[in-house]
Amino acid sequence: MSENIEISENNIQLRSIASLSEYKFMIPEYQRGYRWEKTQAIQLLEDIRKFYQRKKKEAGEFYCLQPIVVKCIDESTKTYEVIDGQQRLTTIFIILKSLESARKLLYKSFSLYTIEYNSRKDSKEFLETLGQNSFDSDSYIDFYYMNEVFSSVTNWINTEEKAGKFDTADFLSTLLKSQINNNEDEANNVRIIWYEVKEKNATSVDIFTRLNIGKIPLSNSELIKALLLKKDNFGISVEMANLKQIQIATEWNQIEQKLQNDSFWYFVYSSRNQFSYENRIELIFDLMKEKKKEHELYYTFNKFNEQYECNGGDVELIWQDVKFYFQTLEEWFEDRDLYHYIGFLIEYGEDITALKEDCDKFDKEDFKKKIFERIKKRMKDCRNLDEITYHNVEKVRKVLLLFNICTVLETQKSDMRFPFNKFKQGNWDIEHVCSQTDKILTSVSEQKAWIKDMLEYFSDYTYAWEEEGNITANVAETVSQLFQDGQDISTLNTAIKKLKDFQSQEKINSEEFNDVFEYFQKKFNEGMMEDKDDMSNLALLDSETNRSYGNAFFPIKRKYIINNDKRGVFVPITTKNLFLKYYSKNVNNMLVWTNTDAADYIDAIKEKLSQFINEE
Image (tube, rainbow, N blue to C red; front, side, top):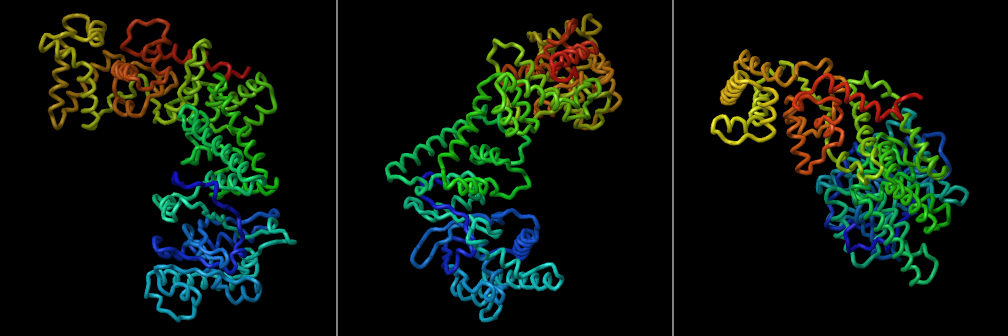
């Protein structure tokens, strides 16, 4: 909500359609007219039918419509301004009008509410006389849509009823049933989230704008906040009620601020999460109530409302549960080992609630043992690293992420942490260390990109060669290690001149290009790797670098990774170590990636992950 809207003043309830009997709803001028299509109305009918036809329903289980946001105009006459939800409210009215004869017979005590669009003359009368042809439905576009939906709903009900697929009495019972055995909470009915705005500072237009710019619905967290901060939750003096509200609101904001810290947020939030959050505290609520993708939009709010009703509106008890849950996550975050291991598990879909249950059940050391067991289960399909290849993308990612985590944790005295926020916010590719390219650059665009990489790499050398300038240490190292005698230097100069010629040509001679490509390929050992798709030749690289230099040779990738690291761009520690050859036992040449380097690299991965991938 906008900052000037004090949510603590608002009233929020789950209400039956029956409770709206004799209400008068006014739709203000700033809202657009009725625009539901017949397909939307039929979908609503089918959803309600599926609900009433489901055989095993618990007492009090209901079908929930999205919120109706209202502001009271005159309480004595039950007159309300509808700020949001007028499309749903109007559609339910039209459905009840299409079933009017049966409704009046079965539910005599229910008087259908009225709806009036302030900017639409005769809208109230038009809705009340639907099906009687007393108005020209083409006089307003709203009337056209209302009439279309009414006709479609009526035809659908008649067709489905004749086919034995629709029962009017059961359907009306689901729409208008208000209680069972004098207990409204036990009824299996349709309910709306009734959100009544009461504060004086917020205008209806303010709230309407917030809800409709970008079509942002009321979130579960906003509804839960309104539920918890209602003044009548606190059966004490006004002053004490205000203090309780301020306390909960302050603690709420502290939790939200902590979650706004990306380091903390991306520790608890998996990049595989199917939900996105405008208010990050909503993740905590979803975790507490175990919301799944298949659940309806307001599942979490409904579960909190059930808890609220069951414990007699004891808000402090509910809020204590929220705080304890969050504090557990904070404790994990502060513990360096738990931060890394649980962060890995969360990223790979571990149930946080199950982790919390283990945490509550065991002491710290036994809990860590349980964490290790869970990681071993997650790594069960990665035990044989020699069989994992480039084509097993998810396995490779999992292995390399855990390899990075174990590497960071290796030095216990260090306070270094793996940055889950940078990892999860970035796009990471599985990259071949030694180029996958073996004379496959047939398109001009690929050839041009490769030529550009090579000329940029040798740019300092070319300048020195042509202008007698100074060669940078990086290229001087290349020239001294790979081009040792005068004949080599002469051939290098010729090859670079060819690259420059290719750069200015629209169409490159394939045979000439392949000769130059093969020359550099041999010099950089790029064609000597035995199994380029093996785990021993794979690393994590950010997608921007990878897609720019995917066909580049090892020293060129190495140069850009070093430059990125110098500029503060996040490079996973094991990727940096690999290109600096920290895993190679004997380093004869920093500019080529050999089979021996690859073997040492895979051995290092096996050693670091041994506690998780060895069956013993």
